Image (cartoon, rainbow, N blue to C red; front, top):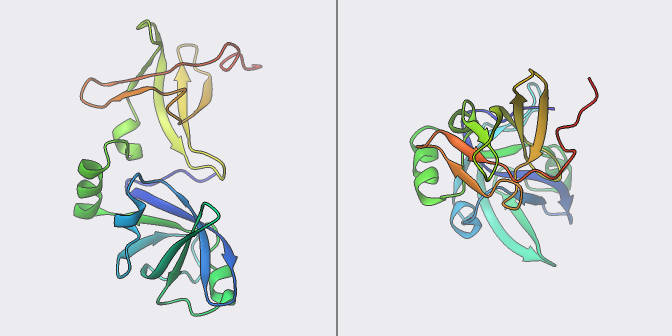
Length: 182
């Protein structure tokens, strides 16, 4: 599993759609209309040697049956679109800072690592040591007091509060989630 970098992930590219270079995307932003606007230039994070361009320029976006489809100027056809699968579209540097201010619910791994993980009652559970981007959902990696690590789906139901300034995340973990075999 790859871990997200210090950049802010806007979306992760999925499978191609159609013949003209469109791809499905899994959104990681609350403002897709703004982040994926026609003409937007996004940095990419992909496996080394994949041939994915360092930046992609949005040519078009649309929603089809609830799924966001995006086409890029640099990718004219389905063959090129297939090569983008798994690529993360990111904002880096100053653009990432702007994204964090605009998207209250967007956090970089650097902001999350080191935060205390506490229960809704304030009981210390451990410390956030990473963020894993998953195909279905992202997960916080939490190191428990006994040194074991567990992953918590990074969704509002299980992580109802992230207080970067206060140095903590509140975890509403179901019973057994951290009962890992040692």
